[in-house]
Length: 230
Ligand SMILES: [Zn+2]
Ligand SMILES: [Zn+2]
Image 1: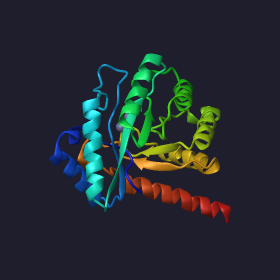
Image 2: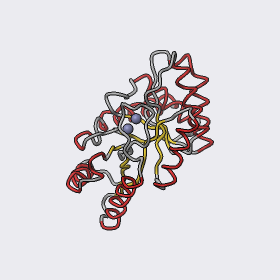
Image 3: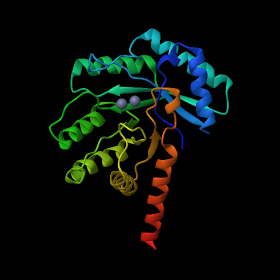
Image 4: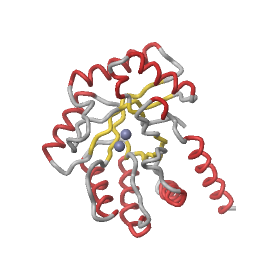
């Protein structure tokens, strides 16, 4: 499985860093990956990357030029957007999306505080309904996730209807535990929603991080499933 969530960061401006990213992807045996970075941010503490025309043009140009020459690896031009309930912020995000004509729009909830997992999941539902995204990044679950099955099913049904993927995030920050992973795999299977893996790498060393372990867990899940059906 390919890594569909790699922050390019300095590689946007620096050809050497970009090359290192590519080498790491090839070394990992990937054939198609998503390079992306954050757009406009809702927290002033976070750096905006793909938020002005000059940076977006550089990002697009570097990847388009790369894809013209190289054939073992295809790079998809992505962006990770911050969800916000604020209309002005959304308009700015939509402007950026239009400007960049990105191939893979990753919807994420960052910086917002919620009283419960339910409130967070409501925000995810609002994000799906109001943003044109391809995938939901690092869907966060906690120990109470089974109490919110209705909301999770609603999210999964919306993903099915809108052809939105779910990311299985492999980073230490956002990885599901085994019971969460099995539960989500069950839901996605039941409602016919596709998933991809994403390392959420912020440096080239983290590209494909923890993929083998998570792939093994997915294989174990599938095996269990087949045994149950027999
Ligand atoms: Zn994120
Ligand atoms: Zn990210």
